[in-house]
Each structure stands twice: as structure tokens, then as C-alpha cells.
Image (tube, one colour):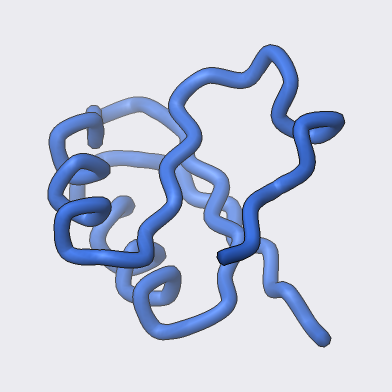
Length: 67
């Protein structure tokens, strides 16, 4: 299971890893109109969030991860 390094995430709040349905449900609880979300994508779940978040009034930035 890959996670962003602490050097990147230090001091950041609200980091969610969407790998399971439980993770997605927890993420859904924090979606708020007017907030911004950065999605680091490696698959379909991230792309689905790119569609859902704007429908909730959120600004989205998508970063694609290549191997």
C-alpha cells in the first residue's frame, strides 16, 4: 500500500486514502461546498471523485501518477 511520504504531507490536514468502500464513505463525510480537493490518481476511484466533487461545489485539482 503506497502513501505519500511524510516530507510531502507534514502539516497537512484532511488526507484520505481511498482504497476501500469504508475509506470512500469516510471521505464522503468531509466533502464541503466551497472547499478545494487535490486528487492524486492511480485508478478509477480517483476519476470518480473528480466527477463527484464538483457536483458538491468543490474545486478539484487532479494529479496523474505515472509509473
